[in-house]
Image 1 (spheres, rainbow, N blue to C red):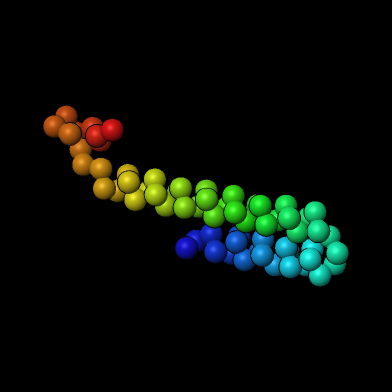
Image 2: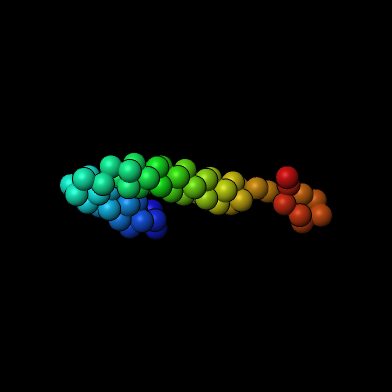
Length: 63
């Protein structure tokens, strides 16, 4: 996955926040990681869906 680095950095920053007694920041980074994973998964689903759509008789993609 091309966004692996982003998820890894969010994890690393969360661990840093936890080790340095920054619980609110750690929670926000946890939430940011979840948002990133959802959005990345959505992009992959959109790309996969676009690749499998067949054109109709006029050459337009089906909706």
